Amino acid sequence: MSSAPPTPSAPPAPRLPLAGVLRLGRPSEIWFKPALSVVAAIAPPAFTLLALGRLDLVMYAMAGSLCALYAHNRPYAARARVLAWVVLGMLGGVAVALVSASLTGSAVVLVTVGALLAAAQKVLCDATRVGPPGNVVLTFVSSASLFAPQTLAQVPGHLTLAAATGTWAWLVCMAPALVRPHGPERRATAAALKAAAAYADTGGTGEGHARARAAGYAAVQAAWQSLPATSAPSRTRRALERLVVRAEVALAAPTESDAGRLRTWAGSLRGTGPVPEAGLPHAATDELLGLDEARPLWARLGPLTPLATRTALGCALAGYASLALGIGRPYWALVTAASLYQANIALTWSRAVQRVVGNAGGVLVFLAVVPLAHLGPPALLLCCLAFSFGAEVLISRNYWLGSVCVTPMALLITEFAGYQEAGTLMTERVVDTVVGALVGFVAAVAVTNRRAGDRVERALTTADRAREQAARLLAEPDPGATALESARRGLATALSDLRATADAAAGEWWQRALPQERVVLVEQSGHRTLAATARRQGLLPDRDPATETEDARP
Image (cartoon, rainbow, N blue to C red; front, side, top):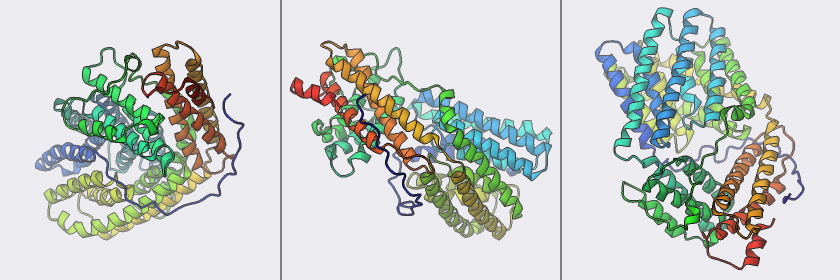
């Protein structure tokens, strides 16, 4: 094995930082897509129901319409599949909720059902990597449905309405394919090129190089996932693949890459113009480009067991606590708890702070806008549409900022069946938010995730083996273009997974010390081997053979 013996570092003392938790970041490059899509998905069904005098049914219509928030980063073939599963998942959760609500009036039972649904939604969304907004919207829809007055006879009609609006949301999200069929792939490739250029600017050793490299590999992996293998790729597809290879090579050898050229290529991917040719040798453009070796779903569910337990326990206890305090909408506390759970304790804490701050600000916004919303049903709908748009505009900058819009929207949705006293709504929302955040975080701390260290060890072993495989091929006089490309891609993926796994484990509490030094050594030797492999493929300028062999060694 090439790695040094593990040198466990002392486990860090538990910290709950506040610095940076509320700091605003750059908005997502595609913020306008979910923002416009959700408005287009909500408005026609909602105003149709308004014209029919059935504003009380808007909640069920919005259940399907909110599916328009998903999969905007996916290529259209994959987007069609993902959105179909999201709509089906939404319908399944709503069906369980509505049937439960019609069969029992016990709030304790309903909270229990909601907590189990939230855990299932969290695990499935994480395992399938569905992407933002993840399980939160599905949990919000199903939890709200649990506490809506319901009879069994009404369930089929409400589900039909949700299915119809879900279908409309699917059409809204697929419509851009008619204008720019390769838009998602072009954006993902441009993001990979920009991230690689940012790392090249550091020279591989400058300030922030480790973070820039991790972000670069994450962007490259996302680009490859947007370019799944096909039997007959188009010319545009082939050109995009070559550009992703260029980004990958820049991450392996930042000092030998032209950051300006990478950014120029990224800029040329805007619009619908021709994709620039990267000029790769034939060896780097053959069969394996776009290969996506995703693990089967069942293999991804196992490691998520602690997360599922946290979610079920935290949501249930938050709902029970809300009931004990006499709050009429315990699902608000349940949804708050469900929204907290991230990859580790540190990130969960950050999300808890963001949720509380955002909801508190949102309650104040609701107080300011409620006189306008109460001017009439059209004004109420227009306010909901404005907040749904604003939430997607702001949430990519920081979760708390998006919550400032989500909170008044959720409060206004409760008024579709009739106006309510604003002070009561605001008080209940604040109390449920605080209860959900506190109880949910305590549950996260109580349910330890001792598997995090095991996953780091497995990731180290995988990266070591991938490096050794690439080094063996480099030592051969004629390793074969396909074998060398496969080894380079496998090593790049293994190193990216190792960094993500180590970062996630570093924010987890109550576990054995992590082999941080070994992680660094494996990463260093792996990136040297990546550079040597890219050079052997003709992707970098030739160097002295002795130096190339030395680079491949640990």
